[in-house]
Image 1 (cartoon, each protein chain N blue to C red):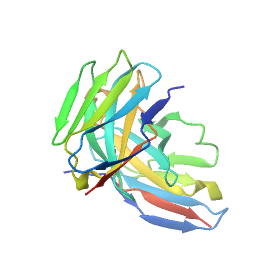
Image 2: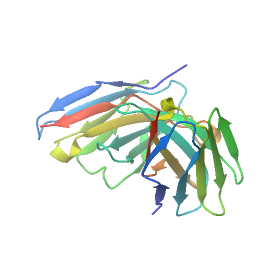
Image 3: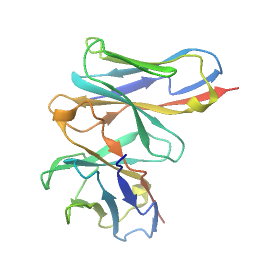
Image 4: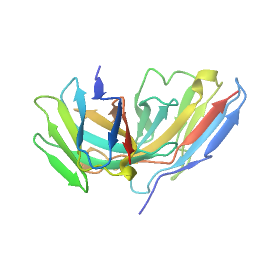
Length: 111
Length: 116
């Protein structure tokens, strides 16, 4: 059974600081996605990572994928308040279409 | 931009009653999904649907659950006899399929189901 773990579960950081969220998964996969969820809201797609070494950047967020280590990272640069949300990674195993979500990281940016 | 729409946004039901949650996936998408999220927890897969049949289901998706695509646009999730533990946010999602893996599953805004 595929397991997807994120750490930390909770992250409180000051504006302007940098930090990284980690996503580990237990079996081989050909696709990994990052989603953002605001409280009580839906899941917004942030990044699609399809191959080993893939790196995607959008604004202050950068995601990377290491399929050999079964690890993805979401790096936040110079955090601002509107990045406060819960971030989920989600993995699709080979030969499958369903998303297996990580535990989520609740990010709070303090002014 | 096309989006997945779900109705109702909030459903309150007595335990033991049947509920039907409705979704309209994006029109050129072929794969449809239901996920649920218990308050404060992670998102869990329930079922996937392709070519008018279930392609995969989780352990959560027991005999009390069913899905249907009654026409060319709607995709429904029915819970036959609701339990307290069915209280959660239910998300519908759709995608074009594995040939378009660079396109993530698109999620609706969810239906908050409250069982009393």
